[in-house]
Structures are given as structure tokens and as C-alpha cells.
Image (cartoon, rainbow, N blue to C red; front, side, top):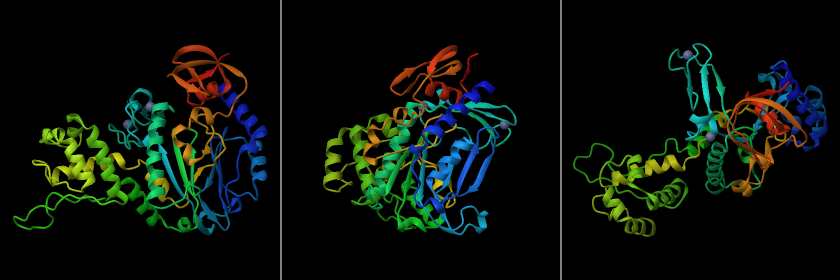
Length: 409
Ligand SMILES: [Zn+2]
Ligand SMILES: [Zn+2]
């Protein structure tokens, strides 16, 4: 065990000594708070400030932290106590993590165990233990390719909203692989800098579709015998997203999909007249032309489409105006991969398991207790079960950091 931790420390140390020039400076570095998770002591060192990036790089090579964070906030005195820092503003940040996305594979590679009572389960970790209501868990997850591509889809939806509904330019939107199981989106722009937590919550609600009321179906109020309101969608913002989303959904829909959308009757009316429905609804904006399909049914489908079109972000991160977030270019202590920025336009083709690899030299012999099949640097590895293998350094460090392997004696 000690041997394995020493190896990880040695590799992180080499990285911060020889490759720290690859760590870009955050903007306004003097106004940022920095924090470090110390590898050996496992404690957080906070409230540090740096005059420039060279000073920070030197510091990293000296303390060799397992994780490096900086504030999305700007402060007058980043080194002061929280209440004396002098908050000047903050970037708008989003965290999209596989932990918050219900993928079909998480049950195969994620496990949690309640530290209080020992009860365990597979898949997404619950907020409280179903047996003892404890809130602390030992969590075993995996940076799985499928999970990361789901996170990427959520990121694409978010970026699309930021560009088209909020009007941020490609230049203002910075997209990063987090180094573990997701993506970060940072927006640096004067207009959002001083937004308070409430205003940021409004943005969160918008991208998540929270509080979005889809009207149609039952008329509101207590109007007796009044006809229901018609269902209609216009061409901007969520209306447009619902419209295009419904087109996608309807054009591919099966009976099963409609059932998942909460439709219990009239499948046939919809499925048989698909083409006509798409034509009248999309081209002519008429949703009332199909016999047997009520405004209430369209509303149900729209609700379902809303959940498909919303971006699954970690809502807490965005509303926290003092948030510490991983510094781009640095290593993730749970993987040995780097947090890396890439151009928004490359999102679709970005391969985190190639672009984020930090350790490119040497091999290490490890005993792997249990690891699924994975790809790193363009090579496929595993699955492994209780076996000794010699792996490229990056793969060995990943398995050790994830608690799946130890250095073989
Ligand atoms: Zn428990
Ligand atoms: Zn997965």
C-alpha cells in the first residue's frame, strides 16, 4: 500500500517538476484563492494567493499536492479569512459529472458502502443510507467511457443553451475535461461576474428546465365547461427546444417510448399519423389536427421531451459564488489524468482518455484486484481480475488511484 502511494507521489512530483510549464495561468491570478489537497497528510490547505503563475508552479513542485483548486471568485485579498476577502465577482461555472447522470452502466461499475452500518449498493450513491440514514459512504466509481460520453452529451446541451439562448460567444465559453468523470464549463464575462447566488440559480433553473410550465390541456382556474387551452410552441428558447425535441422524439417514437412519456392510450393515433403530425405541427404550428390526440397528450409528451432536453448539471456548483474548482492543467488525485481545456467546437470528437494523459513514459508492474476494460492513450487494457500485469505508467497510476491495483513487489 505504502509502496503504491509512494509511486503515485513520485509520478506527481515528476510532473510538477518537469511539466508545470503546461499549466496555464488562470485569468487575474492575483485575485484568486488557491487550495491544495496534500498527498500525504490528506488535508486541505486553503486561502493561498500567488502573484504570478511561476510562483504557483514552483509551489506545486515543492508541495506535490494530489489535487489543486482555485476560486471561481475574484477577491481583493484572496489570502484573508472568508469574511475579509472582499468578494469582487465570480466566473460562472458548471459541473457536469457522471455521478449525477443515471447511465445504464453505472450499476456495473459504481458501488457505495455506508460507513456507519456497512449497507452497500450499486449505481448512483443515495443521499442518505436507506438502512440507517447515514450520510457518509465509501464510494467506488469508474471513469467509464460510456458515462463520459453521456456527460459529454449533457455538456453539448448546456453549451448550446449558453450560446443560443444566453448569447455567450464561443470565446467566452471555456470547456474542460475534469480529469475524472465529467466536464466543466467556465464563463468569463463582465456581465455575469457580479451575479449573486439567486441570479445564478435562475440560470441553473433555465438550463435544467426547473419551473418550466408547459401549458395546454386542462384550462387553468375553475372555469366550468370551458374548452381546454390549445397546445402551441413558438420559436425561441425552451419553446424551440421542445419543438425540435418533440420532432426528434416523434419521428423515432415507438409504443414503448410513448409509454415512457406517460401516454397510456391513443398510441395508434399518434404512430399511424406520424408524418401528418410532424408536418402540421412543425411546419404549420398546428397541434390540434389529429383526432384523438388532445392538448393534454401533447403536454405529456412535451414534459417528457423537457427532461430529455435539459442539461444535467450539478446545481450546487453553479450557485456557489465562492466555489473552489480544479485548476486546469493540474492532475486529478483520483485518476492521475489532467483537467484539460479544449475548444468548444471539438467537443464532439474530444477523447479524454487520449488528451488528458499526463504520464507518457515508462511501465509499472502492478497487481490488479479488479478492473473493467478501459482505454488509455489509444490502447485498450483489461478487464483484469486478481492478476499481475505490467502496464504503461498512466494506466498503472489510474488503477492505483482508483483503488483497483497496487504496485507488485
Ligand atoms: Zn447505513
Ligand atoms: Zn459507465
